[in-house]
Structure formats: structure tokens, C-alpha cells
Image (cartoon, rainbow, N blue to C red; front, side):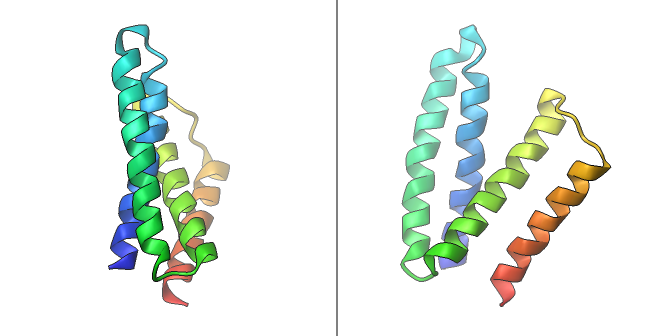
Amino acid sequence: MAWIYLIIAGLLEVGWALGLKIAQNPALREAGWGLAVLCIFGSGFFLWLAQKHLSMGVAYAVWTGIGVIGTFGIGVIFFGDQFNIGKSISILLILIGIVGLKFT
């Protein structure tokens, strides 16, 4: 169950970064901030639950890794962020690290 909590925490990590990006639009500022704040608290709560059964270092590394990969993907897909071979290799290495932490 701890790994499920950790995945939820990581996805909510993506949510608060997305909320901050949405808040840059003046018409959506309040909604963006609302999303960011809810996701910050939710992410922290699920990370706290996950850390009851996982080591702090593993939980934090996986949590941030999910956040990095998810936020990067949303940026590329929805906001036109740059995507190139160097970035794709770097994201792949982060993913390999997360999988390695799960199975070691």
C-alpha cells in the first residue's frame, strides 16, 4: 500500500506544478492557486503515509522523480516545452532510477 500512496503523492506533485502554471493566466489565477494548494497538501499527506513503511530517502527520491517526469511530460504535451534527445535520455535515466529503487 505504501507504494500506491507514493505514486498518488507523486501525481499530486505534478498537480501543484500544473496549478502554478495555470495560475499564470490572469483569468484562471484563483483556480490555478486552488489546484496548487490542494495538491500540495494532498501530496504531502500521501508522502507522509508512504514514509510510514518506506525509507525516507527512497520515498523522497521516487516522489520527486514522479513529479519530474510527470511535470516534464505535461510541459511538453500541453505547454510546448522543448523536447530533445538529451532531455529524453535524462528522463529515461530518472525512470530507471525509480524502477531500481522499487525493486532493490
